[in-house]
Length: 201
Image (cartoon, rainbow, N blue to C red; front, top):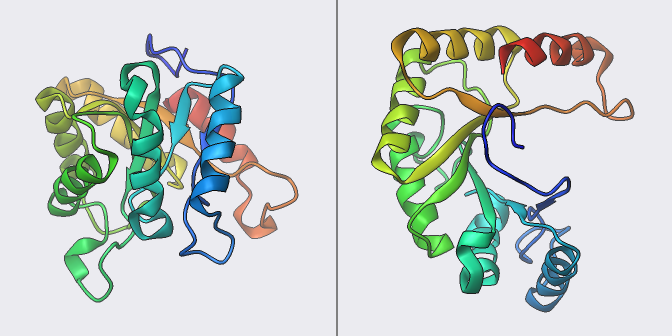
């Protein structure tokens, strides 16, 4: 089960950040399709992408790969990172960027809904209530089924969850944080934060 929801996901989630050759570490179409097919044939149903991955190619290919059996797959994508260089409102957590990003992701993914919509990282500018109310509107509209948050301090996540609970808004079902001991920055120790977040989500 995904978080505190009834959504059923495979234990392994396929990250598609490298679907597309726009990135130095990206894979071409045929290689990406092979990776996807191996994952799907092994029973995987949870696929994760983002609007900024390979400048939209990742979403386009992911949408194509799952299209023939859309309702079988649990599709996750993200917003926050800029997908138009030089335009300040194509970046951040605010309502305008969130709603614009959802519409553009839906077009690239060629689907009517997103199963899990992540906030990619906290911008330290947008008020928490603006983010949570906008998320709630998206879920209520049927364009998004569940919401999640990534790369955000524990106290902000905790505040957002409590605010949503008190106001009757949809709460985060998922959290993405880096917990690798190899990659961990000693000045940004996420292990204590991870323990806090078990209570927050």
